[in-house]
Length: 529
Image (cartoon, rainbow, N blue to C red; front, side, top):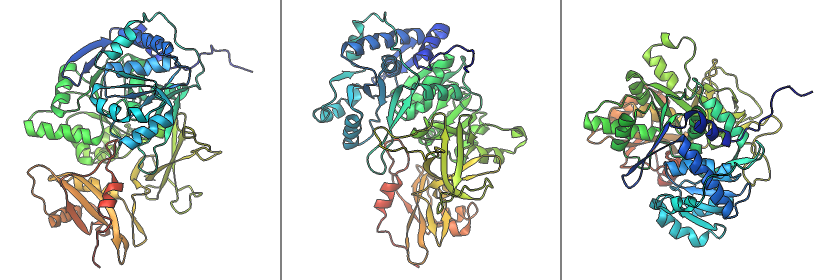
C-alpha cells in the first residue's frame, strides 16, 4: 500500500523555480577578476539558466552528458549550476589549482563535452586543448563569449524532465594518492543535503541571509551553499578575487551575514585586520571546514560575538556530515569550554551517521568514550556508494559504512574530535600522536602563523614528530621557546623532537596542508637517540 501524498521528483530545477518565484528580486552580487561589479537576482538567474538549457541542447547535449566548469565564484558560474542540471546534464566543477596532468586526467575521465572557463584560466585551456579530445566546445565565461552564446536564446523552454536518482554533479577528490576519484551526486541526495544545510544546527539560513561563500564553487559543491541558499532565496555575494582587503570591504558594503571559508582564508583576513587596525566586519555567522579550525581563531570569532559553524565532511559526503551546533547547556559553558567544542568537528546532522572502528581491527566498533581513537566511518542520505566509473562500491556493504581516512575520537555526547588522517598519524613507541592536536597547539603561540607536524624515522621509537613552522611577519620565535610553550599544552612524550622554520608550507589544490610533500621534503631527516 502506498501513502496518499502527491508524488514529486526531487529535482534541482525546483530550487531555482522557488527562488525566482518567491524571492525573485533578491540580489546576486559579483566582484569580477577585472575589478568590475555586476548585480543580478534570482529571477534573472533563472532566465539565464533557461537560455543556457536551450544553448546546450543546440550543441547536442544529451541527458547525463558532462559539462565542465573551470571557474571561480561569479554569477555566470552559478547560472551554469542550474543551466547544466536543468538541461539534464551533469555539472563537473573542476579545481583550476590542480596540476595540468591532473586536470587532463579528470576532464578526460569525466568525458566532458563542453568546457566553460574563466578568462584568467585561458593559459591552462591553451596548454590542455590538444590533450582534451572529447571536449567539443570551449566557452569563456567572462570575455563576452558566454553572454553571446546564450543571447540568441529566449528562455522560453522547460527544464529537462527526469527522475530524482539521475546524476546531477560530478566532483573529483584532490588525488593526494593516485589519480583523483570522481564523486557523482544525484538530484535527490543534493536536495536532501540542501534541506539539511538551511537548518539552525547547520548553516542557519533564511531569506534575510546574505551569504558570502569564499569557499570556491568548484570545491565540494561550495559546501552545498548555492543549493541551500536558493531554497530560502538568500542574497549571494561572490568575489572572483580572494584578496583579504577586498573580501572585508565587500562584507561590510554588502551586509554579509554568513561568511564561509577554510581556515587559511580566515587566517588571511585576521592578518589583514591586524595589519590595518580594523575591526572584524559585522557578520553574524562564520562557516569553516576543509581542515581543523584552530582554537585561537575560534576564540577570536566568539569574542567578537560571531556564531561559528565548524563543519566536517568531504567530497564523498556532499560534503557536510557533522557540525559544531550548540547543544543544551551551551550558554552555561565557559569561554574555554565553548572554544574547545567549536574547535572539534561537532556532531552528526540528521541524515548522517558516524562511528569509529579499531585501527588494527576494523571489525571492532569503538565505544563513544572520549578516549578511544579509531578510523572514522560515515554513512547517510548523501554519502557516496561508489566512485564514478568504479566497478565496486566504495562504501562497505551491506551496512554501507564509508572509510573517511580520518582518525577520530567520539565522545559520549556524540562529539567527533578528529585527531589525524590515517596516513598522517604518528606512531611513536607503539603509541599514537595526533599531528592535528600538535599543530593546533602550536598555532596558539602568538608568533606562529602556520604549523604542520609530521613523523620522521627514529632509531629507538620508530617515529617521532617534528614541527614545521611558518612565523608571523616580524615575529621572533626560537625552537626551544616554542617547545616550552607546547609543554603546557600537550603530553610530554608528544613534544616534537625538532622544530624547523620555513618560509612556506606546501598546500594541496584544495588548500589543505600537503603532508605528502612535507614528508618527501624531510624524508632524509635524521634524529639522534
